[in-house]
Length: 470
Ligand code: HEM
Image 1 (cartoon, rainbow, N blue to C red):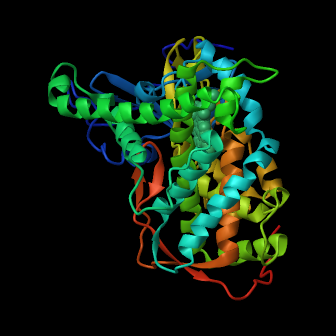
Image 2: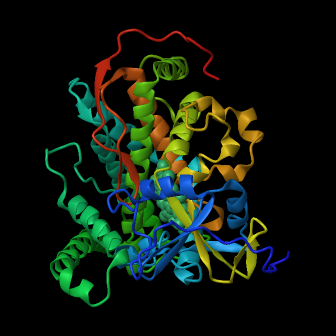
C-alpha cells in the first residue's frame, strides 16, 4: 500500500486550540477524570487529534475507519503507552505489561491460554457460584449497598480463589484486606507519575515514592509468600492457575518464580476492577430500564427455574442478559483505551502518515459511539447485540477486550463470571436504585460508576415473559 503522501495530500492532525508553551495542552484536561476529558475533546476535535503535555505527545483516535487500520495485525502491534509502562514497577513482565518481544510473554501466553477457554470456565464455575452465594447472603439483609464496592468484593474474591486458592476474606470483616489498599495505592501512584516533571518531581514526590516502595513490598510479600508455600508443598496443591504456572503443562514449560509473581499481580490487577466495573454499569442500566430488567428476569426464570444452582451450561444460555452486559461495555468499556504502534511506515485512513514505531491510543468509548452505531448511539439498547445486527456490523467497531494477539486473555472468564452473578441477582431480587442518582463515572485504572447505591428487594413472584427473551 502507499505509505507516503504528497504535501497536498497530507492531512494535518488537529490539536486542542489553546496550547501553553512548554506545558502543552492542559486546558480542558482533568487529572481526576482524564478519560472523560479526552472523550469531550474527541467530540470537539474529531476522530483523530494529538495532545502534548510537557514532553509526552499522544495521538488519540476514536474514528472507526481509522481504527480499522490500527487493529490490522500485519501493520500494527500492541504498544505500552506511558500509563501502562509505569505499571511495570508492580507487574513487571506479566502478560499485560510485557513488551511484544519479551520471551516470557510467549511462554506465559502459551501456558495460560488453555486455562482461559470457554470450556476451561467449567473448572471455575463452582468457586464463582460460592462467591455469588456470599454476595446474596449479604444482600438478603435488604439494606442499600454501594454497588461498585460490592462487585469489587465479588471479583477480587473470585480471582484470588480461582487463581491461587487464596481468599481475601472480602465478605468477612468490615475492613478491607491490607493487600487491596496497598495494591490500589501502588497503582494510583504509578499512574500519577506519568506526567512527573524531571528532577523537581523527585523532590516533590519523595514521601509519595517512599510510600510507594512500602506498598509495592506489601503486594510482593503476600504473593511471594503464597508462591513459596506452594513450592514447599512439592508439587502437591490445588489445580489452579498458580499450580499450572509452577508445574507447566504437556505443551508448555513452567514459568520462573519471579514471572509467576508478576502474572499473579497481573491477574489481580487486570482481572478484578475490570469485571466489577462491567457488573456495576450493567446493574446501573438494569435499574434504570425496568423493561430491560423485566425481560432479563423473565429469561433467568425460564432458563434457570426458580431455585437450585445453575449448572455450568445454563450460564451461556442467558443470551439476553449477555446482551445487557455487551451493551453496558459498549457505553462504558471499563478498560477505556489500548495503544497500537506501527510495525512499518504506513498510513491510517489513507491520509495520516505513521512512521515505524509511532503509536496511537485507541479511545474505546469514542469508537463505541462512532456514527457507524447509528443516530441513537448514546441510548442503552441491548437489542443492538442481536446476532443478525452484530453480523451486519463491521467487527472492529466493538473492542472492549482489545484486539489481536494481545487481546484480553480473561474475556471468557469475565463474561462467565459477570453473567453468572447478574443472573443470580436478577433471579432473587428486584433492584431499586435511587431515582435522584445521576451517573458519575470515576476513573482509576478502569472506569466505574461512583456513588451508585442499590437496594435489593427479595422477589416473591416469578416473571412470566413480558417479551420474548431471545
Ligand atoms: C470486563 C472485564 C475485562 C475487560 C473490559 C478487559 C479488557 C482488556 C483489554 C482492553 C485488554 C487489552 C489491553 C491492551 O491491548 O493493552 C486486556 C488484556 C488483558 N486482560 Fe483483560 N479485561 C477484562 C477482564 C479480565 C480478566 C477477568 C482477566 C484475568 C482473569 C484479564 C486479564 C487480562 C490480561 C492478562 C491481559 C493481557 C493479555 C496479553 O497481552 O497477553 N482481563 N483486557
